[in-house]
Image (cartoon, rainbow, N blue to C red; front, side):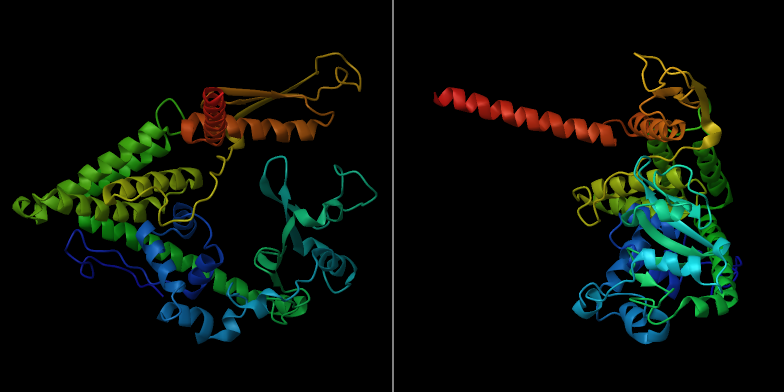
Length: 435
């Protein structure tokens, strides 16, 4: 575990590396999500970019101590991890989720309201959660419970209270004990839940301690005045004047300001004669950006945290002369999440040619994002709830375009279409010249 940090414990060198011990649970989480992008992993784990990158290299090196601890050291606690290269584990069969749901429904020893189901919402393109005993009010058919009305392929996981007991992607089944459940059944989960919850709470406490330690060490590197300036800049980025959404320009300016603060701290300890070489200066800037990512990874706003980490990674790539995403996993850009407090929503009667009661019910949705004044409408279906979901998806696409511009999902799609058209025109011109 981590211990408390006092000024006497700290390294006086302001550019010293920050190292925090990796727990086994963090290693498991990192390995299970290894296909996600580096900034997303750093945001998820609350750790800097370099630390996550280095740890992943160790977890995928069969000769490293980290790999041995994860897969060999304590098999009784690590048997729910699957090595993708093991064909025997790959071939195992996961108990279908419908069997899991039927067990929960008809097993008299289980309380249905202790379970929740996570499922993919194809309209919002997000993972939603439903209580097991929620009535079915939206999906056609004869099922009275919503979780049984959801198509099986859209269910991603099942939880007992806070603990996952069935997960499609991770191949975990702790209801019947198949796959990475390794024989652990739901009665064992319930019996040991108090111990599991205690361990989880202890890990949360360790994470809070680690956050305090990271902040203290960066403060020691920069000095109190510089750290306060950096902290105030971070706060202003979370609540920019005139808007609740930081633009790309604000994030870029934040990184430049932070770099200048680190350079100022560096100049106090290092003779400028030793850093005349531009490559040395660039390497020091890279070090500073990696340290900054340690602090950014602790920001409370999930979306802002990941956006800044993406910018930092891009800045590091330019300084190191690497092509974008040369060493990190490439994933499609996630759409920004909506804060319901930032939305203004109205329901009005539909307009149009009529028919199907389109102009008899108030099922037309007008949705406004207050910070940016982006506006969308939807009356695509007769269902008010479906129209609300579709409107939110459209607003997220608009917000993505507002924030990321050409790098947004819409922008990238448009660029791809334009490129395809240009290639087609070039081919047609080539054919005409041959004729």
